[in-house]
Length: 241
Image (cartoon, rainbow, N blue to C red):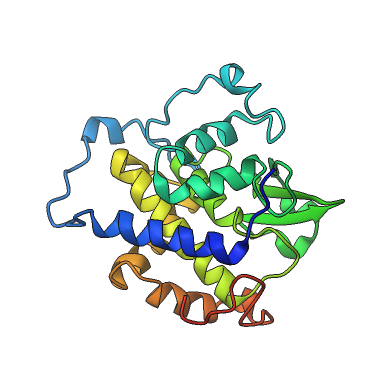
């Protein structure tokens, strides 16, 4: 397994993000209206997506057996392979990370780990040399695009260190992933889901900052949950990310 240089991978992802986004035309003035008949199919409950496509979990069970048993995670990871912006994260989840092992992913009542984590959308954990990602179980029925964006973020955290710079980078990658994936399925943006609400908020900050981290960085730096984080962490020493 090839070892990962975090500084190198960070620069590569940043270049891919810039290249991918600059060659696209992001004019949202003429967005196509959503088919009203399809919207009527939406279920008004947290995490119920608009026309969530069927997914054959059994067909992908072998491919992802070292990562997850959950079809919703498999479906999200399949989507991560379809856009360049999230391919690094996909490979990291499959094992090309600092531990050189696939990341274990599951939905979980995160409050069981610590009641203070109850509101977390996801939690990264390292135990006995292996990385784990626990997604808040309330997001199980969120659109696969939203879960994919969240996983693109969580895949960046590969050690016990975290920082404001690292979170800014991860949030920006999450926003860019959501934007790219929902270009192909814009109805996902209309799903009634707290995770979709998060992703749409990040995307708006990304757009407002002209597809830079300008406003996402402000959101991270003023987030009460991050008030004890240092500015830098290994691989994320540059304040001008």
